[in-house]
Amino acid sequence: MSAGVQDRPRTSDPRQGSFPIPLVGGWAPRRGLLVATVVSVIALVLAVVALGLGDLPLSPAEVVQALFATDGSFTSTVVRDWRLPRVLGALVFGAALALSGAIFQSLTRNPLGSPDVIGFATGAYTGALLALTVIGAGAVSASAGALVGGLLTAVVVYLLAYRRGMQGFRLIIVGIAVTAMLHAANLFLLLRAQEDVAMAAAIWGAGSIALLGWPALVPAMGGLVLCTPGLLLVPSLRQLELGDDAAAAHGVSVERSRIGLVLFAVALVAIVTASTGPIAFVALAAPQVARRLTGSAGIPLVSSAAVGAVVLLGADLIAQHVLPADVPVGIVTVVLGGVYLLTLLVHEARSR
Image (cartoon, rainbow, N blue to C red):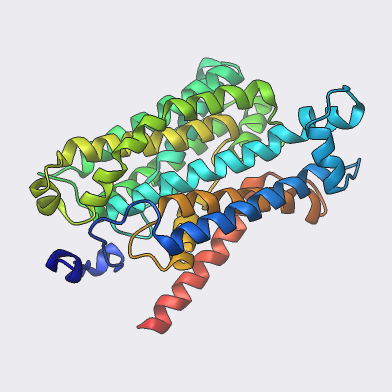
């Protein structure tokens, strides 16, 4: 074993989390691959269960039969046209949010380095609010506004945080400050808007996939597919975890790779926010849960995406079928995220 592998560097700055950084981890070591497989199977089982729940209850066998039926029956219409877009959206959007969070947490080397905290999701919401309340646009323009708002927020945060290089802790602090200002701007826009527009924007801002159908899901998934070339930057991400000097020594263009990864991660969360509204805490919690399940030194991307899919679909099942009334899934994820943060704080207090 080479000396570089034996002496793995660890972050020592208390502001940056404190997880050790692997030399070159690949996407999934053996345990990580096992966890990703098991969690993906859980996601598949949850999807079948979700497709069978509703006013027309169906068994798993009936769900599978309806998915592949060609007779145009009412059952196949219910499963494929009414329920499948919501279930598929929960899986895909949960995975995209978790992947975005995993990238930001790896770049910042901090478990709080999430697009929720840094403000990119809030910026996407601001863009949608501007389109709805100022321009008076419809749903399509609001989605475009959310995408533009998220990307512009990323540019502003990056420029404000850049000082002869990028440090994760500075990015988080600047992001929190920008988030606070954007929250104030969002509240101002809602108070100034007409009542019906403000009500619709507030409901959308809670984060919901209840009305997600194929006309909205297909463009969103197309946008996510267009983002997939960003996965080519993952090897650079692993090198950046070693530190800027070590990454540069290995031939990585540090700032170019970092900017590309930031844009890729922001695009993921902006596309999801444009389709559903801001859904909090999935990007924050899923990567850390995946890291604990895999026992990985860094943030495992594949396992994070799988956990994110399970978290969002599970939260949507709670929102639909456990609570007394059907509520936006974003409300459930906020509650789950609050429990997660409390657990994290208690764990950190005990470890010290």
